[in-house]
Length: 267
Image (cartoon, rainbow, N blue to C red; front, side, top):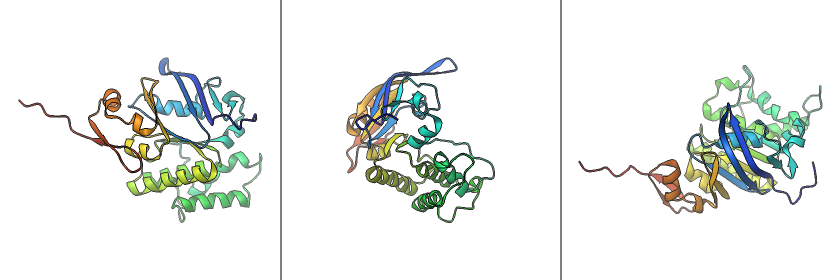
């Protein structure tokens, strides 16, 4: 990779993606600074997951995406895997695979061809499993875990990868509120102590606003608002683009979005 000490972690310029002939992203510009946490929000079908897949190299957009100053198309697969790790909403789970073996897949970018994982690789994996409250799950098959437990295993694999850019697509959708907080606090701690950069999508707007440095609101494949959470999570913007009735009140770590019932019309 090129010397990119001053380059942003993510730089999107006129990102356009169509799937089966249908435009999904219609010219997105977005910059994420190294060490920043940016959360993309928007109604269903806005293009949030598509944006993350393009940044992760899973959709063809090599000229529109730069990672740490290098065009995505210039990164070989193993190089890209050392830079960016993705936690998808519904990853493919190999049948019969145990938790330890699945998380070890995150170390593949560092294992030589035809080689085996080292003691250092195993140490990384065990540390991540411990931090995600998964100690004791090593031999369990993924298929036997609850949705929340699997979600933590998916995150463990991404963290074991050691990448400096973490893409989180609805990372807490299957978690109870306690594990939601544990997972997000861990990600934020790693961001602060290891310079991790986070680009996430989230449906829970209050939780999103508590952790993000900056939020980006997508609608109809375009950026319609970008800024600190208190500038994006406004009653006007949410009513306009989500067609939702909400109240937004200040919270200790960010705006709190409270759904409210529409006013009933008297008969």
